[in-house]
Structures are given as C-alpha cells and as structure tokens.
Image 1 (cartoon, rainbow, N blue to C red):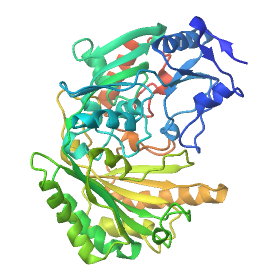
Image 2 (image 1 turned 120 degrees about the horizontal axis):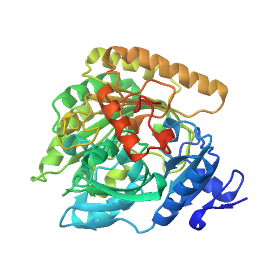
Image 3 (image 1 turned 30 degrees about the horizontal axis):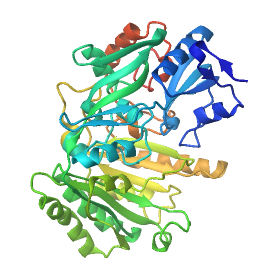
Image 4 (image 1 turned 180 degrees about the vertical axis):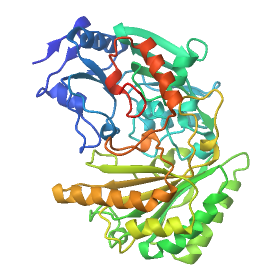
Length: 459
C-alpha cells in the first residue's frame, strides 16, 4: 500500500512497484531493503520525504544509481530516497562550471560539456551517478592531471533535517563544504552540485589485450614507464577471465588476458598526446603483438567507453587496496595469485595507476583532497552460487596476503565494494571534525546511517 506523506510525497512499502523502482541497485549482489522508499524528482519531494521520515521515526538513506550498494550499511528501519531530480545538466562555458542535479549520470555531464571543448573528472563508467561519486572523492582517468574530483565541487545544494534547504559554498559554510567533499556523508540529501570543468582538446585512449602468458614481461615494462609517466597520462592493467558471451570477441574468451587501458590528455601541444602514448605502447607492442588494440586519438566523450565497464546491472563481489610504490617483486606476487596458472576465479584483477595530481594535497580541497598511494588494486568476481562466492572470498584473501607488503592500509571510497573488509580514507583528526560538523548540521542524527564506514567515530 502506498502511503501519502506530507505535501503529497508518495512513499512505497515493500512489495509495491514504486518500492522496487526506488530500491533498484546496479550491484545485484547487494540489494537494498529499507523499510520504505521513494523516488524524488523535485526539491519539494525531497523535503517532504525527509519530513515524513522524521515524523515516522525512520532514518534517511540516499542513493541515485545504486552503484555503491555493496559498500553501504544495511537499510533496516530507514526510508530510502532515490534522487532523480529534473532539470538536466547546465553548463556555463565562461565560468567552466556545470550544475548537475542529483540523479544525473556521468554520460549526461560529458555530453553537455563536450560542445564547449570542456571535460569533467568522471569515473570509468558512463552510468555511475555524479553526486555519489563526487561525495566519495572520485578518482578519474584525468585525476593524475586534475586531482581528486571532489576538489572541483564549488557549491552543493542539500536538504537537511527538518526539510531545510541549504546552498553551501566556500563563503556560506566552508567547513560544511569541506566535509561534503569526501567526508563520508551523513549530512543531508544532496540535490545538486556545481562542478569545475577543464579544457580538453582531445585524448589518446583505448585498450590493448594480450594473452596472459605475456603478463610478466609486459607488467614490468608498464611499471617502469608508470613510475615516471607524465601527469597527462593514466592507465590501468587488468588480468581478465572473461565469460563466454557472444558480445565479447572470441580471442578474448580463449583464456585469461592482460588488458592495458587508459587515457592521455592532450595539453597545450596536441601532438604530445600521441607521442606520450607511443612511449608506453611501443615497447609493449614490440614485446608481444596484441590480440586486440583500440588505442587511438579520440574525442574526450569516448573516454567513457575506455574501461569497458558493464552498463547493465550485474551481481558483483569486489575488493580493494591502495598500494605504495611497487617493484618487480610486487608484480610477481600479484601474478602468482591473479595471473595465468593461478586458478583465480576473479573476472578481473586490476592495478590502476595513481600519483600525479591525485597525490598532491589541496589547500582549499575537501576532506579527501588527495590520495597518498601509487596504485589502486581492485578485484572483482561474479558469484554464481555458494561455492563460487566462497572461492571468490578465498581469492580476495590470497591477493590481500600477497600484496600486504605494499598495502598502505588506506582505501579510496569509490573503489570500495564491501563493508566486511578493512577500509578507511580519513585521519582520526578528520573523523573528529566531521562528527562535529554532523552534530551541527544534523542534530537528531537523521542521516547517521548513511555515513561511510570508518568516517565516524560514532558508528
């Protein structure tokens, strides 16, 4: 039965079609099961939903696309607000700023910015929600050049306890703006953000694939290049065990493959990007001919397809570590547990290049203003039953043990896929400050359930 809340917001109960729509997540292995749910399409609907939750004694949880479903706490006893606010993305090319309503996905921002020769620090998937990604910091393929994505957030509109509407920027409430940008959430329902864009004349981007038997040599070449790579370039390497599906090229389904994907951003001298890409790719192509190679000069909008993330919901178990500088010994350790002959059940085991501007602290940045690590590891498995789930979990543990000597003990929130493994991106001092801001902004603790694990001492 649908419940009519204040100002005619309609809150759906379990079993109703509107509930299933509002609770739909991208990661099917982490379903959302709140006490009630609503899809809010206007600011007034968000305000009414918040007031309804307070009246009924429910906590408030928020999502847009559900990509982060695996990394959030259970939603028992809460009202889930799915944000899909109307209005579309607005770009001010003179100021190089985009206004993005909550619920918009990165493809919408990229397509709105492209006609103006501008780009955004988007994630690797075109279907990821913009606001959730930015509130968690955001690590883009452009991040080595422009830094953590959240630092580019200039203003945030949100609904706080009591249904109050606030526009937060550096002049109105600098402490809250700092907290919103990577502080772990729990402040209110964000309804829009204003985000800096940057000029992008063009890119060189793509993915190349080799049989995984070549991984030991190729990863060594890649690691040596990555250590001194230009900040305009960002890459990732993955050991892929791809499913036997007709949409996947046959040569990539014959066994494990090594994939090198990435982006080189053209700067003031557009010819530099192809030269920088060739500096990496030339030695790799000479060492072993790729099975498939899509690296090419491209429009920035095409970067959305570079990582080839799934665009339809999928059941996924994931794991993540941030690593310091690695050497050949780390490459060997990684391949022993994830490479050819390892028996790994993971569909993907990835090392993503960080550093550059991502590692530089920003004076006016957010709570997560930089990432002090050289690489990110992400593992992913597609569970097909209890035995498969156990095999994936065992492999995650093996990879963690193998990479332990290089583990920084920290994580990047947008890469976290689970609440049952160690994570943390803030210092104890930051957590203390964030809790103080939450007490000021949300005295009744209405949004406390939405705080990222490790971002509050009160959790």
